Image (cartoon, rainbow, N blue to C red; front, side, top):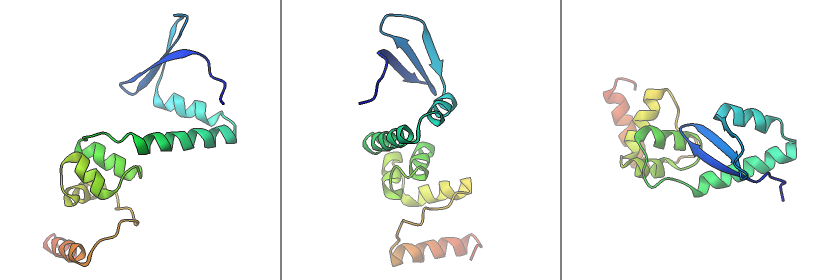
Length: 130
């Protein structure tokens, strides 16, 4: 088990605030500082942290997300294209359009049916891409 100091942690607005249980001064750190701290860990502790962060992400999908949040979750490999669409309340095509607008590519692990490929080819032809 990891040796951790006793503290309260408050997360929000892209920052983490910690306060010791004794009520001492509060420290605020942002995500970049968290990453810097993680880089200072031993390789074994970095693997432990990565594993637990991935487990956390996999088990803590929101019930709803904005289109941008859903695209970020998809790009971070936290959910599938279909699940991202469900979270945002849009179609898979809307997620694909958002990816295209960002210049991001669809992950190669996504498999499309022949009908979906035909629909995509038709849309690309209408856009003058094919």
